[in-house]
Each structure stands twice: as structure tokens, then as C-alpha cells.
Length: 322
Image 1 (spheres, rainbow, N blue to C red):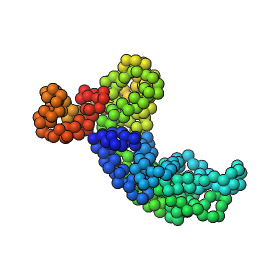
Image 2 (cartoon, helix red, strand yellow):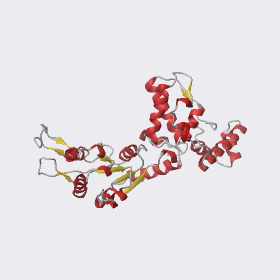
Image 3 (cartoon, rainbow, N blue to C red):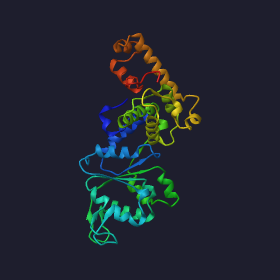
Image 4 (spheres, rainbow, N blue to C red):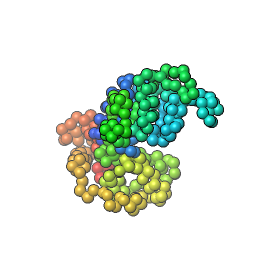
């Protein structure tokens, strides 16, 4: 998302245009009462966005519940979502509230909702239509007020065509849609996130090593099929397996980094690189005085500050050369 420090606590780090647009959509969506469908590749941060929707909503004081639908066994999906009465089945020695009941007046996040079975989809649709749940083993309905935020890493419209997902359920879930961009479309966010994950890994391991510029270059050029989750894991591996002091070079990166980096920069990379050199040159000629540099660049002092944020030139440890 230039970088808005007011939303640091949401965990949505970034300064790319894609993240700026996502953040703007997030604020509009969070303030509404409707269901949300979050789309995006695996590892791109869909649950972070769902939690941000909850924290910025009027339901933030209530519970945020989350469940991975792909991990739900069909025989137990009703018990997990709606709860059960004592003695409802073997092993039900006490009664238990389900996720819907626990998240009453709050938010329930259904991750990978497209993996639900047809039977589970029918049960979910009924709850969304009626606003009522029945615990397994009970006949008495219970009213619930839950905002559902669902997520999927594959097009549900295609699943409807293939007969794997109910069209009526899709209409209930896909009221407000948010698309989380893949990391490869987020430009310099890679370096910002790498710095964030590196600092976190250092605090957990006690490492004092820093990434070499060539290592950062390799991270920036990689296509990241596993998105933010993969970047976090790669950085953690570098910190743990690298030297405790000094710099960590690109030789410590996984073998795939030597074969998948782009030799020719994209148009966006070339444009950002030019802007960084141009702005850095103006600052150098002005002796670091931002007011004088702003005059040379033809922008206001405030405009220069925003430009420096967008180009990540005011971040600790970041420079035009990195």
C-alpha cells in the first residue's frame, strides 16, 4: 500500500499501486455490512486482508473466527460450523458451540470456501439465507448475526460451470469482492517485505547478519510463485542458515533463484529505477535539502515527501542503488 503508517498494525505492508488500490477498497468494504469474497493466489495474504476487514469494521470488538474449509471432513463439517449437543454422536460428551455461534455479532472467515462439499454448501447456504443454525443433535434453531468473509484461490464461477459449486451460494458470498494481487505484480513491495521479514527473523534468532545488495537484487527479480508466504520462508531460511554476522550473499538462496530471475527489467522496473536515480540526483545536488530539491524537481515539499515514500527512498537501509 505511498506507505500508510496508520495501517501498520493491519500487517498489510507495501507501497505499490496494487496495494494502494487494495487498501482503498478495504476501507470501503470494511465499513459495510455485506458478505465479502476475497480472491487471490495461495500465499498472497487473503487471511490478512480478511482480518483487516474485521478490524476496520463495526464488528471489531467481537470475535474473528477462521476455518480452512479444505481441512474440514465432510462428516464433521456441521459439528465444526454449527456445534453439537451432548450425546449427539459418539465422543460428544459435552455440548459445544460451533464457529458460527462463537462468531455471533462478529466475523467468520471461510478460507478456501470452494473446497466445501456439495452437502456442506447446502448447509452453509441455508444459514446465510435464514440467519439460523441448528446444533447437531438439536431441533431448536438458534439465531446468529455473523458477517461472512470467504476466500478462494480458484475462480468459483468456473466451479459453478463445472458443477462443483452452487450458483446460489456464490451469489450469497460474492456481494463485495476484493482481489489480492500476487507478489510478482507488487514491484518494490518485495524489498519492503523482505526487510520486514528479515528484521523479524533477526529478533527471533539473534542474528546480526544483513543481506547483500546482490541478494536483495535476486529477491526483487524472482517471480515468487508462492507469493508473500514463500518470501517469508526464504528470508527466514537465509537468516537461520547464513552467518551470524556480516552479509548473506545470493549463494545462500535456493537453486531456483539462479534459473528464474529476469535478465531484462520490466517497464515498471525501468521506470522506477529511472525515477529513483533522477530524484536521488536532485537531492545530491541540493546537498540533501529537500526544499531545494523539490524546487528543482518542480514539486512541492509535501509532493517530494510522497515521492520519496513511493520510491522507498526514505526507508531505513534502502537507497536508489538497492
